Amino acid sequence: MSLREQHGAEKLIDEYTPPEVIQKYMTGGDIGHDKEGAVVRIEPWGYLDMKGIMYSCKKSDLEKSKLLQCEKHLKDLEGETEKLGKPCAGLTVVFDMQNVGSKHMWKPGLDMYLYLVKVLEDNYPDMMKRLFVINAPTLFPVLYKLVKPLLSEDMKNKIFVLGNDFKDTLLEYIEAENLPAYLGGTKTGSDGDPKCADVICHGGEVPKEFYLENTEDFETMETITVGSGDKIYMEYEIEKEDSFLKWEYKTEEHDIGFGVFRKNGDDWEEVVPIQRTDCSIMTLDGSYKCKDPGHMPCASTILLV
Image 1 (cartoon, rainbow, N blue to C red):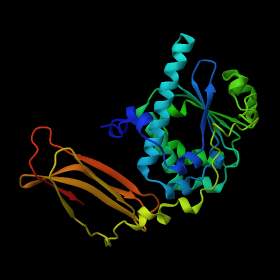
Image 2 (image 1 turned 60 degrees about the horizontal axis):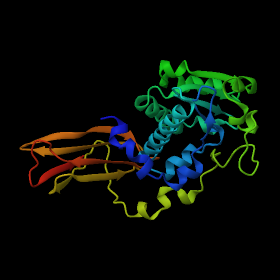
Image 3 (image 1 turned 90 degrees about the vertical axis):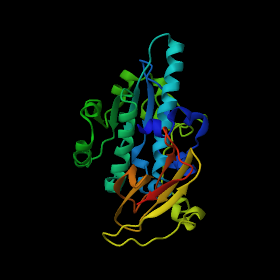
Image 4 (image 1 turned 180 degrees about the vertical axis):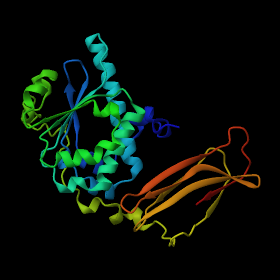
């Protein structure tokens, strides 16, 4: 099952609201359309506090927020196609590296950001049209060397590094009225803001009160000690068909394996494969719908490992 199916992406626009921390601090925003009708998105990546965001939300919220963003793009493109009377598709991204420094080379943050790029590629393979990298810093070659092995060949071919001399190139693809004034266009926010902060989130440091460890929900989680090489089994009886088993977990340090098994007669059937993940930074969560399409006994045993 694809991530898009798993999270019910087609319902996200109507049913999902991202956590406040993502709305306030996850950089980026859609600003209009390019000359071919593709959505134009500005990403001020240099002001993204990925560490703060990862400490402040669950992985599933980042996944659903990325899927929601893409679903909105599809809906926008449908409207633009009808408006212009011609097919409009894809996404033109202006990836602004102004203010990028050594903190952006933090590997868990880089890995998570690239994972979200992969979510886009895997679930919306034709969405990315082109990506312009602007204001590339001196450490860009080092940074790109780290991320290059994780990018698909298709994505690599869509990346254009413009450095600091980018305005003329951007205006070849995007009308000035659809490009923020601070990037060489004429578009401003409702109050004349050249950065259009009313539609583009410019991030900033995430306040620690957003960290999940400082919230009430975190305090209600059960603490279990798992020694190196040990296993913990938690068994549950599921009595109703279509019940959902949900979980959240986080470690104080290191990685841990997690999986879900369903009892089928005398055997245990793996329904969520055991996967070892470093979750010392970000809370991982998930769910499993307890349903046997062919036969559902009145009571089913679920084992968490």
